[in-house]
Amino acid sequence: MKPASRVFKALCDETRFKLVENLLCGEKCVCELIKPTGRAQSTVSLQLRKLESEGIVESRRAGKNIYYQLKDPRVSKIFKVLGYKVNG
Image 1 (tube, one colour):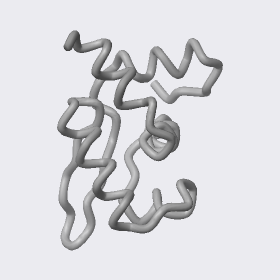
Image 2 (cartoon, one colour; image 1 turned 90 degrees about the vertical axis):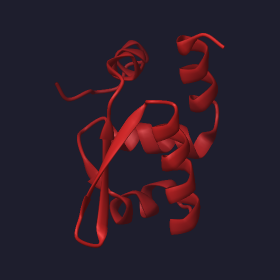
Image 3 (cartoon, one colour; image 1 turned 60 degrees about the horizontal axis):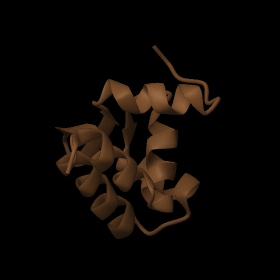
């Protein structure tokens, strides 16, 4: 599958779309992404790992917390075209 197709396929899931939408303004801890998505922590973590495996987000650990941020610049461009406010 072509890289662009993989990005769009990953964003077709509502939870993953919301996660990326919430990461547009910068890095966030998993705990900060639970409420906006309305999903359980385990679901949020699973979907973030899927996004990471596709190269869309990247993570870093700080103590007990894991922080995620957008990695693929094409994703920000997609959301910008859709009318979302994007940092950077």
